[in-house]
Length: 555
Image (cartoon, rainbow, N blue to C red; front, side, top):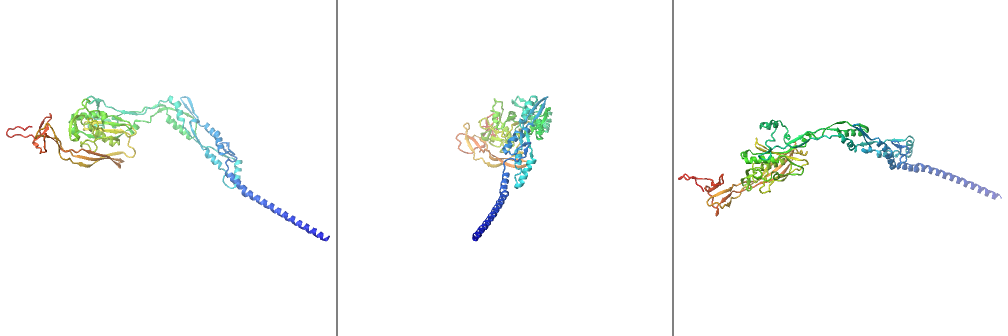
């Protein structure tokens, strides 16, 4: 019995000890769970919530834009809400009411381009309470919810459609100004040449005074007033649309909309004679003299006629100038007179109708080079002809193939004026057009001798009308030359660039003789040289007198 009692007591103590251990374990486990829960809340859950707040795609509660609550909206939803409300409200206040002649005309928001900073505002609003610790973020969100955050849209206004709207009512009451203009002033036709009379046209001011020309010519200070007829601008009246648009622009910049009283007033043209002249300048000019040939009446007549025919020629952009196209065939039937012209490749001369008009081609050619226009086709004279070497040009309608052509390679019309100075015996060409580009303001021309071409051995040509021992000189030897010409571009007096224009070759000719049939190369006796007199009759070039008879030897 006692043994059983002890056993029972022992078992009871073991059970009590076991229960106590279990309770302790449970307490420890509960404490551990509590600790883990606290750790989860403070470490994992709060971090998850912080990340969720930072990466949120909806606006926090309490955010509004122009009074529109966008709490909980996404960016797209907020954009749509603001476009449908705030932006519409702003647009409704953008209008201008024009009062003109007692009538009102309202340009509503459709006449303006309105640019809102909606995207910028929404981006800023979405960025609120997105950075920091969880507790800080929660505090910021609570503050936003309780106290709110109000944003205001800003905007700019451009009157893109207002000018067209103004025209709908202004055109009916506006007389537009007439801009200044000009035309080529054409001289009277001279009966003898049947061409404009260009004599001494370019002599103005002191030059006209020295030449004892008219008081009108002396009073002119701008030679453009000789070549062009300028018409002053005429003011218009009504709505000054450019001026009104300046007011509209200012009102838009100040976001000051409402009423504008349209004032009727004179309207000045932007195009005046002064502005026309700024873009109509003397671009290229040249002159050549004819003093040594002034006594040849036929040549002087041809120069005067040709100057009149070229005078006032206008070339639109891309158009070509053709000397032969303007002057036509030089024939007696067309009113030209006989004057010396180069023949036989520069070896000889003969009178031809229109002789001497090559001087017009040469003068124009140099003016074209000075003006930096494009030379399309040019042939020099066969031999140097008294012009700057390498800078001459010739034309010919006998063969139909020698012409002088150049092109207007600018963006504006070109006006060509050729005139003859009968006081100083010179021919002038002046070309007017747009100013040079900004890269240069002057061109200089120059040439250098590249090579001298020496005549070869004499040549002999049989002339059936001659008989031994009589002979004639067909042409004397002519030395040939090769010149290279250059254009030097300058700006403010300093060289910018020099370009080669190209080479000009003047033909070389040996001495050529006319001899009798059967000539065998024997020396030609000078006493039997024949020449043609003024009437075309043959006579001895070196006549001798017979001392016994006193008579002159004749062939």
